[in-house]
Every structure is written in structure tokens, then in C-alpha cells.
Image (tube, rainbow, N blue to C red; front, side, top):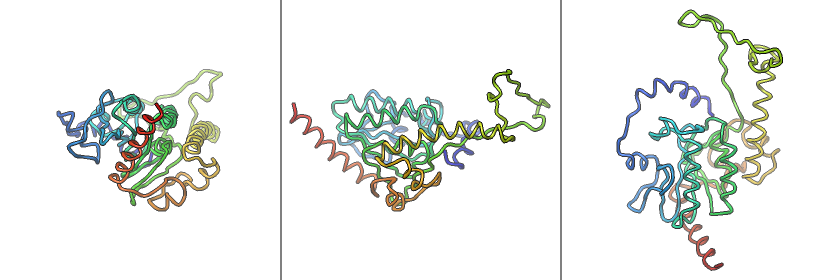
Length: 281
């Protein structure tokens, strides 16, 4: 997750008191998508957030990514892995959906569940056409997911990348507001259960875990983008992000497009796919 988003997420308890609550679920969910029109409808059987336009299931990946639903995902301020999975499965099963489009504007989020969803997205390409489009940011876990699509486009000011894994670990050095100091005491054969980030050994243990997670991240991006893992590590920002045409030149995305153009293209691709299926019967 990007640094700013991670800090904002740490303020979640305060944020919860300030969120406007929209009682009209249909209006709230439509507001999540930068796509509108009388032909736009909710995807049946999904999370309630995905919309179908001209035979294309538009699946939102908007805001921080969590493994499961919570109050932020319920009111449209974040995305859950389980919610995207429900939308994906519903879209693949729907007879009136010809193609899928991930609509992304997310700083990334928790690692848990992202690899599994990435596998499902990559496998979905063999069932129905799947594309991704970033209307704003597709960073970290959001880029991980978007990279699994057959075609990945972004706006001219779209930001992609932030490949890598980060963890924030507190270490108590003085008494808390209640006057308590907490000690972590682990069993004899589990010294790495509570690594101390202020020591070299503890930091090495933490980095080893992050590197293992990063390795899977890079492997999935390599598979989805159909490039060597070495290219991902050397050309895809080295943990940083790239914007618009620079991201395309690096091979991180396939093109620069508006959301309308991306949707129009997928509607055309989807109809062609459907005709090909019917002709083969």
C-alpha cells in the first residue's frame, strides 16, 4: 500500500465517525463507478457494487483493499477481496455478460487473499475476455490484480506500480496512557515469533518474510504481463510508481485510454467473443 494511504488507514477509528451514510444502496453503489447512463444496472448475484453496461461487467477495485467485507467496503470507501470474487464469479456465470472490466482506483492494501484472487482473475481470461482500467491509481495490491487482465489501460494521469511489500511494526519504549508497559515473552524454540525490528536479527527476520511475499507478487505480475521476472524488478519502478505514457513505455500497462474508450472496446470485444461462441456450437 502507498505510504499516504497506509497512514490514512491507521486513522480508521476516527474516520468511521465522519463517514456519510447513504441509505439508498443502489444510488450508493452507482456512485462508486465512473460509468453512468440509463442502460447501467447492478450485476445480479454479486457484491452489489459491480455494474453491467452493454454486456460488460464493470467490477470496481476502489479504495484500500481488505481481505473481507467491513464497514468501509459496505459504504464504498474500500474494496474487499471476497467482494471482487463474488462479482467475478457472478459475471462469469451470467448469460448476459460477455466480458469483464476491472475499474481500478486504489492505493493497494492487505496482502492476505490477493494472490488467490490474482490466480482467479488470470484463470478467468480463459472463460470470458477480461481487461483492467485505472481511472486514477493502481498501486501495490491493486496493480497486482490489474496486471492479471489480458489488457491493462490507464488514464494519461494514471499512476501504477508500487511493487513490493511493506509492514509497519510498533515497538513500545515507554508506558502507555494507562501507565502500562507490555512485554512480549516467547517460548524457547520460537525466538522469531516476535522479532524485534530494532535489532539486526529481528530486522533480518522481518525482511525475509517481506521478500518471500514480494517474490510471489513479482511472479504474478510476470505471469500476468507476460514478461520476465527480471524485467519486473528492473523496469517496473523498483517499488516506485510510473505515470501514464512512462508506465506504458516500461511495459507496465498496454495503453493510455479513457474509461469510456476502455468500456467501448470491451463491449466490442465481448460481442465478438459471444458471436464466436455461438458459431462454435
